[in-house]
Length: 442
Image 1 (cartoon, one colour):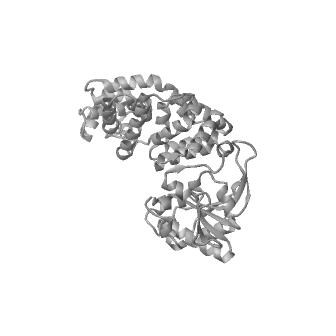
Image 2 (cartoon, one colour):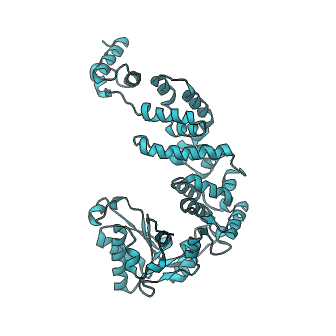
Image 3 (cartoon, helix red, strand yellow):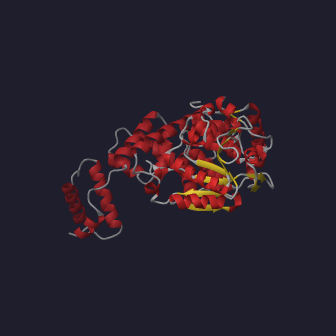
């Protein structure tokens, strides 16, 4: 751990570790809480990350009292927008577009979410259901949480101001990099906690404590995840694939029994893990290099997971994704064949690959060899992004008919540019005139 709770004694010392935009929100919330006699706390992941010396992407606050009014006063003071979630008694503070001007800090327009939740107790009417909640003291609120490392609070105002509340020794588990549930039925009550746990394990390099790991495996073998709605499971998987290292999360998911439960496969093969690791590295490269090509990371990982197509269909992922996943086994063969061609003309590669989703090309290359990955990088960076130097409107003015004719002409100009036959705008216009004569419009 990079920091210690022993060095943080006052609310101000805790707040000094937060980004400027979070400090601004906290200061307004503290002032409003003191004015109304409400006890206010930093809670959950925010405290966990502060104890680890990490940057806090999201800001979690909890209060014993009238949270909706508290949230409204903070929003009014800072020009934020309030979204009240009655079911969970939580106020979410959303920044408007001009937030950067109202909260003076670099990056203020790109912060995570801010929640001010009512300190609450919860009851699960049935396994896998969303909980029913009621206002409660902070001690009860911490006791209803998923893991000890998230059941920590810091008093900002009121009866525990300046105190670190750690009734389940979460800070000790942080030091040992352990993920521990608070009670034996935790994964039965809310099986998505297993998925949250594997995300924490992958992101922070932690592991499940021995008993917790056994409880997770038991819940997965007992089909606990089947009690959760498809929407909730889908959201959890999307969050997992958005983690800095999805493969580390998937490794933890394998150990906890999540992958066998979701994919109906006991173990992923070495070749499948190799492809997943290659895809993760490929995506890091793509995000730096291919800014003009948006990539859906989740789709790529689903392509490479055995049973990924069935899982996407079952959980209601986008219909387009399901269709692409169904086509991937066949498309993979044609993609690998195209990438295997010895020194192909760029236009030939474009003709074979341009109509295929970039995610499928990346997944196919990740599951092949390093030679194929290098060829895919060359195609995506040097071929796919090349456009003709003449626009469709210019072709219309030259006499091309609107519709398929212009599309075919633009493709021909692009291929000519790729092969070095029409690199300049003048050469492109001359090529367009030749095409026009061939189709009989001159």
